[in-house]
Image 1 (cartoon, rainbow, N blue to C red):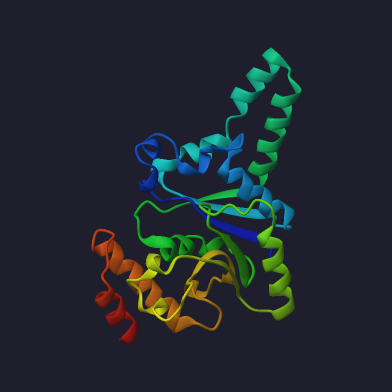
Image 2 (cartoon, rainbow, N blue to C red):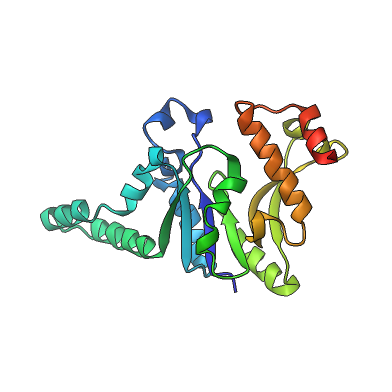
Length: 227
C-alpha cells in the first residue's frame, strides 16, 4: 500500500513575484484556506500516513505555519472560539504527519525528490505537485487504485496546449501533450519504474537547465536525449 507522499515546495514562485518574495505561493489562500491544505486533505483522504515536504531555508515560513502552538494556545485562551479550536486541531493533525527535507539549491524536481531517499520506507510513494489543485475529485485515490491493480508506476496528467512544449522533442508529434500532475513511482535513483535510462536523461536535462541559469534550448535537449 502507498502510505507516504512527497510534496516539492522549494521553488522560487517567480511567476507570482513580488508577492512570493514575502509569502510562499503554497500558503496563498484559495477560497478561505491555503492551497497547500487542499493537497494535504487529498493525501489524508487517500490513506497517506506520512508526508514529506521539500522546502528551502527561504521558505521556512511553511514550517512555521505548522508549528505555531504558542500562538494558537494564547489566542484560544483569550477568545475560546470554536473556529479557532477547529483550526488548531486541524494544524496539529497535519503536523503529526509531516517531515521536512531541505533543498537549498535550485536543481530541479529530480534533485528535490532524491533528498527524501533515506525517508522512503517502501518501494513506491506518491508525489504531488503543489501547483496543481484538483478540487472536485481525489486524483490520488484513483492513482493508488490503479497502482494496486497493475503493480507499477502510475502518472496522472492533463492535456495542455502544445505551444507550452514546442522546445522539447518528446512532444513534437502530439496534438495535446500531457502535463504531469501526480505520480506513484519508485525511489530508485528517482526513475520511473523500469525506466532508469529515461530518469538519468531527465536529470541531465534538469542539471543543464540549472547550469544555464534556468534556460535550455531545443538542441541541447535533443543532444542529451541522443547521447
